[in-house]
Image (cartoon, rainbow over all chains, first blue to last red; front, side):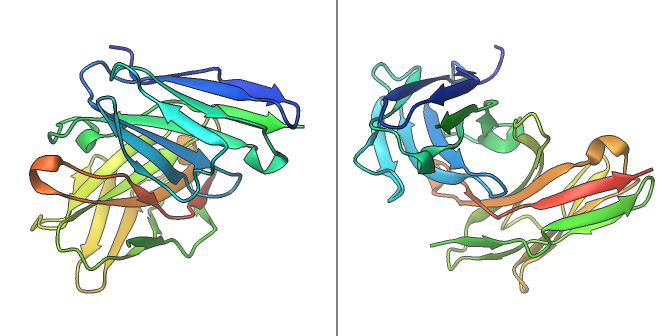
Length: 117
Length: 118
């Protein structure tokens, strides 16, 4: 297993366009998390899934944001009608519901950096 | 709700010296986990060390140790024998444990930028 994979690594889009990011978690991990990180700040929680069920959404996740994990494997995060304030790094992480010897449960991807111009 | 506070926006340390990065947390839940992550300029979050709220001893992982003071709600990271490659952002984070349902999402602090000088 090569870890958590996120695509694309970078995305530049014009204001008002829709964008979609993909996250492929570690295969045996049933939990998947999305975070947003703006420059100079720590990651902020957006939402998480257990298998295909979306169990929690942050208040940060406005109506323009939607996340799916249709078969409990990969996940997509879509932002509609992007705004300049959406420019950030979007990080994905996965974990199991059992304690793990490695990373104590969380493995992060390298993120997708979104720039809205 | 839980909260993590990192009061040092930036720190400098000489190569081969030790450095302490501060972290305080706030939660009323008795069962929680504390983490430290390193984030180099590439963006990946690299796990460094973990401390459970019921762990009796301070966690250690190679050159990293966590100074856990439960009564003060602090979880400072100590890096011994700093190396140039340690220059990065460091984040303290916590999660609440929920028994058989496992951990919830992480709450992060604002981070400390460490620069190791030769």
